[in-house]
Length: 466
Image (cartoon, rainbow, N blue to C red; front, side, top):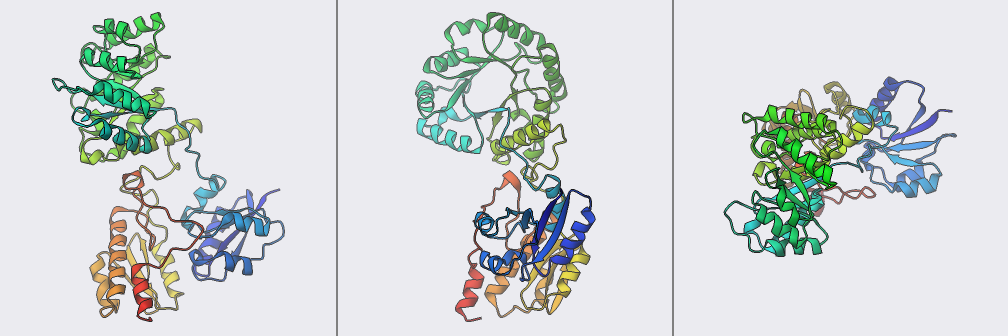
């Protein structure tokens, strides 16, 4: 028997919800729409729902708007039917229902992130441990201590011991085998990097080595070194080394694929910093592509760098990408529909409403409160007294009638500016909500069980008795 889903909404959104559900069609579920008796569904409260909601017989699930700030568990207990919070916009309902009304499971991944501290030699031990904690919070798994050529690192051993005492996995990263021996004797877990010419140092190193070619691009030497350690039963990671664009990038990608074909079972590592740090482009897309290659080649370790200002969130980006790609690989699916964490500039479905739908909504408004929405044709601002569509926020001001109301003018200016940014970039806009730039600029999430407190402008108006 098909589920009977009950969708709760408000007066203004009901027509759009009816059209959307009718368009979905199919036999997966039956549905009923209930009007909560409020104009805007986001303003419904538990008290209102407890008083007004009468569920039809046989209801199996109750779907509330995504912005409804209510206690779902309390409502489930009160009505004896599961209450769920649906998507924030009706336009997203088909995709939400297509997943059974459940968000994608992004709890798992199979990629270990080494986060290199390039500037470790100039940092105090305390600063390194603090930075490692922030990187771990963002998704890092291994603290990679960078050693610089010709730069003294007298506190290397102390750093390794302090990080291990704090519960971190630690790697020491240097082109000088002497640094690797020092780090290993202090108790690090990995050393980066050795090649077939420096393997003799493993007699002094208990840590897991990362192997690289003896010379740039020399895949054969990497295979020989890997075979030596495999025959000895010694754990290791192999890194063919990713080169920057115009300095061997395509050939280096081919090396990764060639090594995987030659040694299907060998654990590998890919360093992404030569692309993210050395390409002046937003790193979310670069990271997604590189980790997509890693996913296809079963590379389960990545070395990342977060130094340049434009890579300030690259740890979080790698964490988001590995989870999305793992979920897509598990589902044998394209990496689409698994979340917007990597969509920093443009959203996949930027406009929740069409101009016609907004016009119909504006025509139903009977109060002076301004509503702001964004559609393909621009920024819409409307109340009972009028409806404007602008592409420059300043163009709206002459017709708003708020010249003598400073707090209201400030509020509208801030919201219209945000709406204009959303329109120009192709981002989803919702009044009184921050724009969502994914992991590039995480936004605070409010308490989903209660309405927001009044903002500064509304509090000021209340104090004036308006």
